[in-house]
Image (cartoon, rainbow, N blue to C red; front, side, top):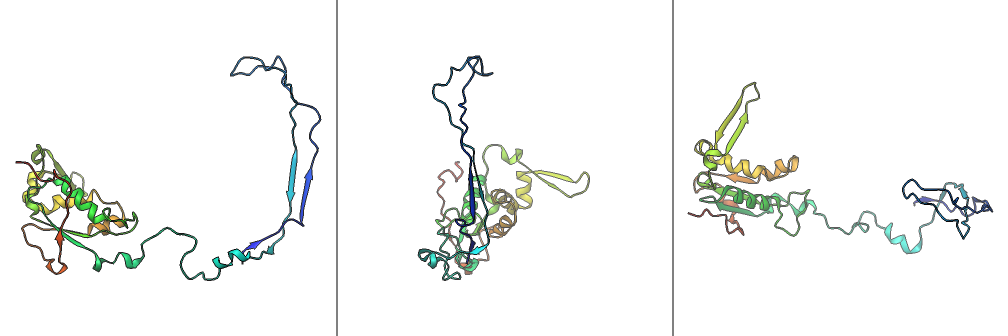
Length: 234
């Protein structure tokens, strides 16, 4: 039972009488902002110097009869918070959907944003920012992803060995010939949250070169793509 107190019996209230001298402005008084005088007040203003002092003691308060149901079953459902929040059974990895998408002639940025939306779970009505609610996405033919403009020779990827002078820089074309999977992984990783949740979500991305993948047992379905400009125009 909550600890409260009825202070009606132990309270002392001290009230002082208001001042009998009316407060008025002097005719010659000027404000520093307005620069003009105030006229004498026609109605006297009353100042109330009411000071209250309450002395309380620790007593047990009885719960009202109309609110007793709030304390009957504290181990049951939360009657205080009506907002739905996903439980552990709502985001089990073994029950999540698997998608597959072919990256052939698809624009890198538009493909990565679509993948990030489904990995994050933003396409679901139950999306919760702090919970892993998304699906798994498989990308095949990663070596055939496309970019627009002159990004094949102008887009740079940097990595550092951690030692002085250990910066390595290569273009999109060079990285695509060396490790084509890293291009899509790098793009999707930048669109996921930074932190523990983002690292966990990044494990939902599976990128492979070629048309084959080892996830046939998960029965992946085609990734729904709403962006009509994701395919490169030839």
